[in-house]
Image (cartoon, rainbow, N blue to C red):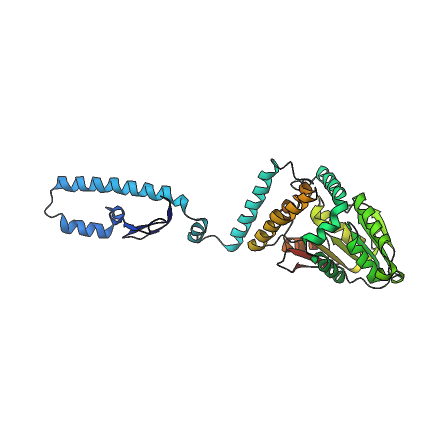
Length: 365
């Protein structure tokens, strides 16, 4: 019979059963020879009891008390986690949050040894891991746009529009989209800066750049108003070593790229280096929220919606990469600290709706 929970008091120990709801009063087990109440009763009732009987009675009670202590010790580990946490008055909310993040990190680390079916090596920040991620994004290029549409229910378009707006790109500007992928954000920047502006789209995955160029060619004048958009120059390059001079760009965006680089502080420093004074840099990515409920919802969606759908398109291993990569990604406040350390004058992290599943880091040089 499994116990549901225990209630203990100085006089009564009540055991509630899941099956019959009966309460078993075990008060005699709580009566210790060191208890003041017990001692007072003993003085009043043992006046007519022999010394031998008193010693025998105390020995029996001592044995019973020892058995009771052992039973409490063995059963305490079955308390629900929430009950044990409530009884720990010294734990602060910050400590519990850090402990939870540590447990998730430990889970990711323990999973890595048995997760050969996950592409992109999300568990390491090395040159080899970066090379594996480059292969990952080359592999998913043919289905990347379709999966984005289906899995985000089209919301990725709104998030990308917000990112372009936060960049404050204007007509005639020279702008850069880092980790441009298939070119969605770069195309929006092209519309925003107009035919007098210049747009550079940079990515390390050749297949993504090829797909981005194809999409631009497929656009017709009736849908793109081509005469009023800037030509986009597609560049294969490294976000950690941008092939541009200092102080080049009037606005910079980065969509779903910062989480995938092997050195986040270096990537932020490079963005700051190539930006002109006063430039805004808007960085869109998944949000590693400080709220545990948000993280649980995100994990459930990734495991039960995203990965199964990716499996139908033969890219299951590639999309299993997402969850562990998000769990090791800095939180919003941590990203702000990293941006300021990289030399930005200001930095703000916005959690995007619905549910704060995405975030946008906006920095100013």
